[in-house]
Every structure is written in C-alpha cells, then in structure tokens.
Image 1 (cartoon, rainbow, N blue to C red):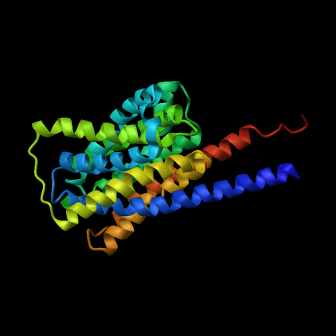
Image 2: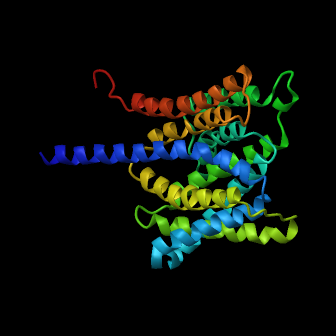
Amino acid sequence: MGDEVTASRERRAHLRADGALALLTVFWGTTFLVVKDALGHADPFSFLVLRFGLGAVVLSAVAGRRLFSRETLRRGALLSLVLFSGYLFQTVGLTRTSPARSAFITGLCVLFVPLLSLVLFRQVPRIPSLVGVVLSAVGLYFLTQGGADARGAFSWGDLLTLVGSLSYALHIVLTGRFAPAEGARALVAVQLWGVALLSAACLPFVETRVAWTGAFVGAVVYCGVFGSAIAISVQTWAQARTGAVRAALIYAMEPVFTALFSVSLGYETLGPREWSGGSLIVLGVVVSEVGSALWDRWRERPLAGA
C-alpha cells in the first residue's frame, strides 16, 4: 500500500512538473518576439542590464540569506559567466536574424549537451544522440540556406545565435552538476546578478541607446520578472522533479511556438524550405532524447534464457 501511495505521489509530481515546463515553453516562444521588438528601442547590453537587473532584484527578495552562501556564490559566479555568454550571443544575434530562425537554432542546445558531456566528462554519446545531431545539422542547413531569397542565407546573426546555443548547452551541463535539490532560487539569483553586472561592464565599450517608450519598459518587465526570475526558477524546480528526456521533449516545442507566433503576428514569412529545416531540427531533438531512452532500456533488458 505504501509503495502505491509513493508511486501515485511521484506521478502527480511528474505531471505538475511537465505541465509547468509546457506552459514555460509556450511562454518562452513569445519572448523571442518581445526581445526582437525591445532591441529596436535599445542596444543589447543596456537591455540585458535592465532585464537581468530587475529579475535579480525580484528573485533576491525571495531567496533571502541563502543568496550569500559561499558555495552558492562560487557556483553562481561560474554559471553566470556561461549564462551571460548565451544571452549575449542570442540577443545580439536577434538584431541580425528573425525570431523563428533564432528559436530553431537556439533549440540545438539540447543536441550540444551530449557532445559537451563527452568533451568535459568523457561521457560517450549514445548512437541515437549522434543520429539526432546529424538530422538537426541537415535541418540547420535547410533553415539557413534560402534559395532565391538572399535573406535566407546563413547570416552573422545565425552564427552568433549558434554560439549562444552552445553556451546554453554548457550551462545545462554545468547546472546538472551544480544545482542543489533545494535552494535553487538563490543560485539563480546569483546568476541573474552576474549577467546584469557583466552586461554593465560592457557598456563603456559600446554605443548605448535607450528609448524609454511604454513598449520598451513593458518588454523589460516581461522578460526580467517573468522571463528571467520566475521562469528560470520554475524551470529549475520542474527539472528536479521530472526526467531529463521528458523535459527535453517539451523544450523541443519552443521553436515551433515561436515560429507560429512570429508568422501569425506578421513578423516574418517562412517558406517550405524554412519549415522543413525547422522540423528536422525538432525531429533531431526528439530522436536524440527518445532514442537515447529506448537505447538504454534495450541495453538493460535481461538476456533470453538468463
């Protein structure tokens, strides 16, 4: 009886976590459009300072004294460097590419995770992961090699976004090693402060501009409070309560939502080539994650007659 109650609680916890991640995925699908609009009113570094500074203040009020733990500060400082790199390249890349392309390329971070795990921790990728990488590489080619339309060619914005995707993958790998089961909000708060301070340190070396319009202030609040403080906290909470495969599959839908929002709101028009490329990238993520889970289950099956 006790085992059944425990199993039931675990199932409910998984469902709550999966539901939270699904809602986050839809929400994050809109942030690419919001950031794209915000960059029309400010330079990338000023936007990052305001966005993450606001998010850091909000989350610090919730995290309390745990924020000043030596271990939290040490781990948060390292993670903030990687997270800053990801947001920097993604945000600057968005000034030179479309929201849908940025989202699909950012989605490749899931596939970079096993490759980085191989390089950093000697964890050999499974065969399905390698197949997923190949599928997504083909998808990236289709997505960024437009035919007659010169705007479809691989651009500097796409390249910067690809570097940002690699940084996000490294952040995922390191978070898996460093994130505690409890007190995750303090670790996230330190990271937000780190990104805000690193962005501020770059301001003297770039041309700054900020137009304090209602739309820009709304974008800062939307991305700072909801897209950074709340969303990253919910993500950290949910990932501690669901499987990595389930989380990755849910994340794979983020670029799809971004593309649907972007096209429906008139930000861009995607042709068959772009849709095919984006679909291959999503398929690569699915094959990598589902295939890896099935591969592990197959290898762990008991031998016949044993």
